[in-house]
Length: 568
Image 1: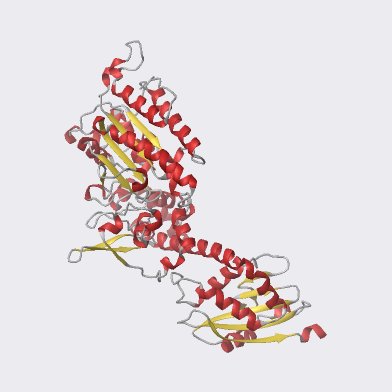
Image 2: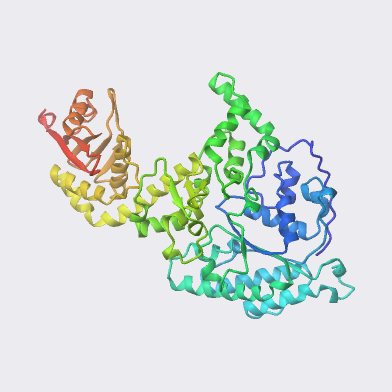
């Protein structure tokens, strides 16, 4: 590889630049910012052990940055890491240059198997170009074989080449990031999935056949349940997903945050102090971060780690937001919710599940994956504890951000399933409302609520309001011309829960839980929620409804139809 001149003079006490390394996957660039969280000890251990290794971690957990760290170390870029663990002489790392095959499968085009093949071959040729090698344009298998053989024999390259081939070891380092990207978003059992799996299986079988010539093979992914699809057996890979050696390989520990980002914590504490008009310390800010973004454990006695993406976003903005969900929810979980919602039939508040090691390490078919495996591997559950006597892991939501993300995923899947399921009922419900057939409207709503799985938290009145709002929105009542909805419409006396307006009538709806429809109706009248609509030339229906705790459906209701204002 062509030598690059570097003038990197990084002191541990250097002044940090203003910009945090959000989204950076180039380790040299991150180190230059002064905000590098040093993971080179883990890199050194992987290189020295010479094992083919697999590890799964949730989205936005720094996998790509770690892959780049390994690639840069294995390319012999010693100067970049002079202030890191691996750069300290006492830690005994022997700096060598290895040919590196570094592939990010999330960058491959996979709309068709032909495009996937061409995309893989193109990526392999780009690697060959870096080493001034020319490989033949043939099958994926042939292209990969040609590249590996030529990288193993760099010493045979002409002396006139700019590549100093004698500097390279004969063994190769193979780094595959996001191995499951070409298939994880595809419909299970589809022709495209089957075709892409075949392409990937051919690739990985070829790679496996050269295993003895590799110094290190590291394969990362978001999940493990595609392993059996693309590998003909996974016994040659050491899976360190829940291994003690990798507990903090990805993510930030609390100590790392306090040391590396101390100035950022101080700045946020000052801003919060001014806003709240009271003294807030960096330790108190750290406490809030812990609640929102900490809590991931990948080994029973391992360190608890923070999601690096969300932590950096918070340190940049100073606001406790759901950054992980905003960056994209796991489509596999959403699809499973849509296909089989009964699997998510549980209460999500204070969620706690028991799981075996096999549950966590599941590598079989996506169509057969259990709920615990699915939620653990998509990052919604993490190891909370381990019971030695039973051999069971206790799984929980890692933090507030992930619990909120789960509820948002639920809402997303619910809105879609409700819209799809009730699209044929839309006209019937609209007709019931337009013709003031209250009993028919209630019957349809109860039918809808009967389909809600128990993962929807229905212990609070506000959740029934939210669920009914989602159902009506899914039926197309939000913003329509002939029938539209206002949620929590304001009058001088307060807010009504929902207002539905058709061409002929306005419905003022108040929702109660473990109460009665009569009490809800009385609240509408006492607070005058209907008064802002008296000038409209439409019937006004006051409707109080009550949801039953056990059935989670409307068990009684009361209504009045007001039309006196139409005669004035």
